[in-house]
Image (tube, rainbow, N blue to C red):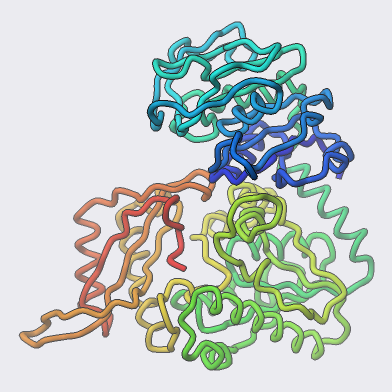
Length: 514
């Protein structure tokens, strides 16, 4: 589609998705590409701006991720962040060296308000630093526009060539005025209009889907989660009863969720589509028996999903397209579109088998972050209780049960999770928390219940607050709520004698357990 584009060139930084998300908050479309992307491809994309991410290396080391000096001669504004700032200086003739001490954490930065990046930024602002190296000598044509107590060049620019280097991370929330800085780069310096909005996304995609599908039949992988539900309704608006939604109850859903999904999307409901429910619990349990390695579980669940869809497609006749609710974080975290380390495969991306018996896979939400998917859902008129439903991974409870998956373990985590969600809602916290759930650890420990020794499982509770699901902090749930949850789980869920609360942030942890 014809839209303004800013690209993020990834050098292995942990915040690559966050940079792209912040650009989109400026209503400008943004995508992530590896630093290995050919210069000719970058030219063909006609980006309005380029942002270079952070990275784990020193830019002057042999074999370090780098870029061509030609990148800075394209006439396109470039913003380097942390490693990207150092690399810009290094490539253009400056000097980058190891600092005597690492500068890390919230740091007061003095900025020059004559710079277009810092026009309305407080002269003494707080930013997030994370670097050992520093710009010891600026490249020819650059001037310093920010400094700290230990870093004389916290930002530099060559305004004539529209090149900007920032030593800190404006994309993280710890940089108090980082959003302003990125706005100035994207909207003022790059000259973007800001036409990336969800209402236009919906209409453009409905038109594009109709043109692509034509008279073909479409099969949608409907899980009942936010992503697949939005994808299904988007397709329903585009092609109506050419769409058949197959809901596979793989036995790894939350308690009573299968019946709830059928109630929303089944026959006689609000959506113009065909709905089929497949009860395949035993089939999945058999495939997962004896398997404990997380990636293998994801692959098995993803492949079995596709096999079920293939079988259903044969029952209903020729099917041309398979729809999946893949979103942008799935793509990037699976190692596509950037340079960062693969975190995990997703059954919508990395778990696909080599041979899929459909003409093509449609992923209408592939370019969206989670909060953008929710906005699309509201634009489509989907009820708020569905749009703001708790995120649920494609492999379901398969990645919330550490180790082997068995029917007994599934029941334990379903019951514990239902209690947890019930108490969170009763405490009025359900809309304050961005994601919360119970998981079953693979740890068994000694306990005492009714004067008898027990040797049962430990359930772990997880609750996080996040803007974009790329970074997250554990939520501070009131102690009284946690005690009620603990008491109910231990007393009402057979096989559990211990309840833990996970306080890990992302990074270093992930939101899901596997």
